[in-house]
Length: 88
Ligand SMILES: [Zn+2]
Image (cartoon, rainbow, N blue to C red; front, side, top):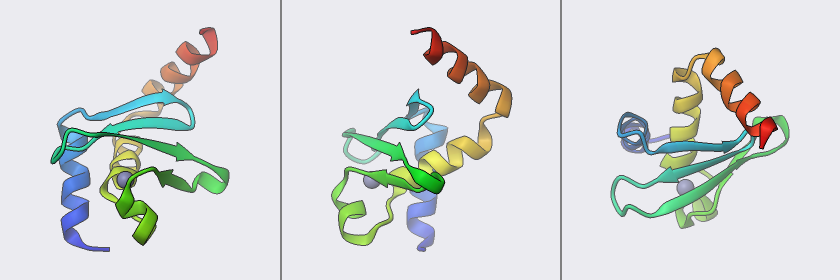
């Protein structure tokens, strides 16, 4: 894994460009292009993204941004997201 995409992922998180939609879906806005990508979390927490980098390499800064976001976001906040989404 290159240092470059890790730094990109961190920049995305710092910019507040990771938005949880549900417990298994995130919307990530690219800091380069401003495009929005859908990241979904499947079995065994395997994440996938709908961008071309993920399609070709199976890895991208958006998926890493979600990983970073989940590590940084306290469990309590993740729990709140879960409660909110269950009410909808
Ligand atoms: Zn991606």
